[in-house]
Image (cartoon, rainbow, N blue to C red; front, side, top):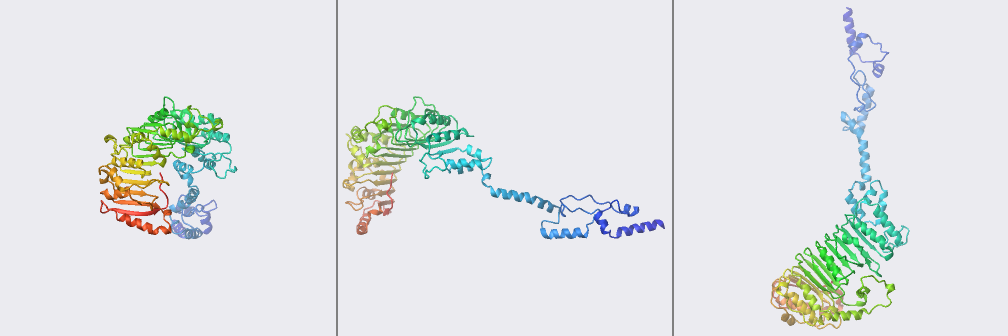
Length: 584
């Protein structure tokens, strides 16, 4: 009986709900339940981790059941969080890690610039003035290294001026030349990588020659310099290019302005130069020839206003682009230019008192400042004497003979050039030799006074020697007192054969004598009458030439053009104004 009463008491204890105080405190030392009840009660489950669905502060009761207060609290938290953030084991983990992720997203949104790679940051800093680019070193620990590895340095006279210096935003205003060179030396001393492109424009003087030589020596021997551009704004004296530049083994682009070039007898560098640009430089014939021959990989050559040199010999098998502009006669010869594509040649012999320099008259290779010159020579008299001694027909024939592989040719010949060309003892031939013909030429642009009879002979020679010509552009240069425009009969006598007339498809003609005698006649009319596959003839004039009282004359010119006989039935003739004059 006693055993049955004990078992029934145990069952009642298991079925009856536990008291609240007991549920809250668990089975402690003060629990007075009978030993039989304690033995029959199931063992409590292990304590739940801190990151359960109930939250970090909630713990499971010892009996395995939650109290009503805990259940109500968890329901309220579930309603606040929503159905997707509570109710399972992973909900608490997501909510606990949401804070750091949110902070990381906010940080990345605030500093997206630091997430860019170095190449992108270098491209941004290269577009800023050097002083502003250097100020970015204070942004973070990474930015000093970004500025110290900036591959391109663009230096102007105002690059190292104080921020409060009143330069008015003028980049040519230098506060202190000595301070400028010291700042440049410090800038290069803190470099973390070699400079790949160095572009400097400064007023170079003799007193800073040692500093500049040291800077260019370090750049040339760094092993990473690819592009070098030096522009001397001190027109009183030429800047002598430091000799270490001729030893640079990595240069691919060299641009020099207002510099004196003393080419050594043996050049150890410049073999990798692909682009050479010489403007207003002083160099002798032999030195220029050695320099061009040394640049065996040269693809582009630009020579503007070279002093002292009167002969240019070009032997460049990789040359693709050639541009020469001179205020004095030049003898230009090309050899083995098999890849030549685009050629530009310009001669402007007017105003020698502005274009000539004291360097054209000195026999020595040393520079002579203006302060040491007692009397300037008579440049006009010197130019006239040189023109009389020059055979321009021979020079032009030699130049054209080396263009057999060229595809595009553009010539600019001033009205003074025609006068010098007329002094030649031999007239221009109407056709080049068979091996010198411009067989690859498809585009020809001429800016000259083609109504001058001597230049008209040169135009005829170019047209007769270009059998595959397709595109022709002529810009008329005329001044008061120019001769009467040549008629179409003259061109019919000059043009021999119809080789280029079988391929010519477009002609652009610009005139500033629209209402003079034989308007738009002569060469234009001849081409329309004989070009068999001509598609388009455009005759342009400046809008300012036509006044309100010229409307009737303009319509008469338009009617006259449309009455021309045509060799091609589908040719389109256009006469329209332009707002700006075409230029070389």
